[in-house]
Image 1 (cartoon, rainbow, N blue to C red):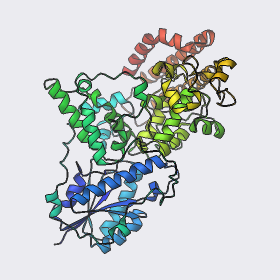
Image 2 (tube, helix red, strand yellow):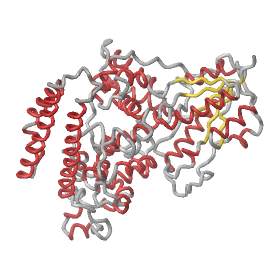
Image 3 (cartoon, rainbow, N blue to C red):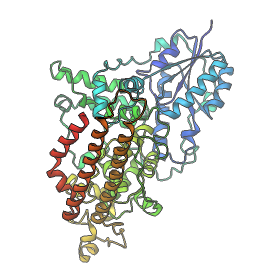
Image 4 (cartoon, rainbow, N blue to C red):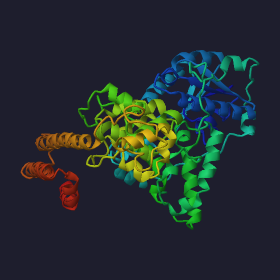
Length: 565
């Protein structure tokens, strides 16, 4: 029987550690590698030019690598459900392979394709390589629900076997066994489009800070592993001015597009650590970036509403404000706070910002200052951020806005002090907000406090050449902390009452009615008293952080005892 395979590239844009592609090659007579410009990505108005450029560069690199193996990449435009019937007939396909997509949209799309392929008598082979672990197994080990704290997630992962080892890259010998004739008009039929063809204006477009593709990813990985001291000691590097700029060893966009296998990164880090530390097993924390990625993928995989408040069971329903004008100022870097504006300018220009910078602007938009929904910020990041992954992006925004995963809303990032501690000289501000370049260090983070003579000397008058602060941070953050406190107080009351009611559920025969309702009542009363005391002391001192900090150990001890019951 003749085996004509098609491998469908989506996120895994690489030839190394690609088990689905290996399955396409096994015993095949012909193999074609296809990429479909899915309108869900291609036609989305919220995908910016930097993300598109990175994707096209990744496709060019993939096609170049396939050329060296006497093959090519077939780029087809249209919806997969419309494209595949034609391709399966035209190429007489008998086997279709692709990488497993754990996200809800991907699972729905792939289910439709698998069903269609069956109707055509085509075998489908799906393999996982975009995540380290089997996400369904993690959920199963957590009583069939995703773990919603990172600590719980780490506990489960520590009980799993190590991830499967990565596969070697596809070889010339493998490809020669199933060589497929490439038509002379291949470039006319299946070429990779340019930015101009996609409707982007490229006049004045600066060179890319991040070049897409597997080749660049592997080169960066080697440079990353050269930091042997960091890997051996696993010391978090101190964040300074240099940390805020795009690093030549940064890898996150390459993981997002699958130009770099997460398993290759995992095992390279693990083996280097063990070599340098004399075979000691590395701590889970060494793989922090990868594990947070897995954590959010796990939380999102069965939740199609993970990217919105409505219908999202894990998201706290916070009554955010609707303020399009304020949202636009934040997104365009016109808040009047140089630290925030510099970050948003870098994001728009380069497609990347440091993770602490992400924390700062997310807090400013949501619970810190503007009280605008995390959904709006997520959409801006989806447009501009190269490594914006649906699950990770939405999960991070829920986390940073205290809508899920994390509820320490007492701490807000100061849009002046946080930046000043990170970059005391203000060089980062001067790079991305050049209108402020002549301001002295003393005023670079708060130019509105500079005397008029200093502003004129710097050729930048606040309110004329650079906007005034759009909000009083001290007042806004105090108000928002109080609003968030009220949200969680109401949530605590609801959960307490629900807990009391649930103890009387007729199907829960193992619960002792004479004992558990009293405990639930006590839990509810304790929560109410704790919130009342915090409210009284915070109101009197106008400093809830001080009171909470002084009594944190007592509160945590009581909470733990109640949790044990």
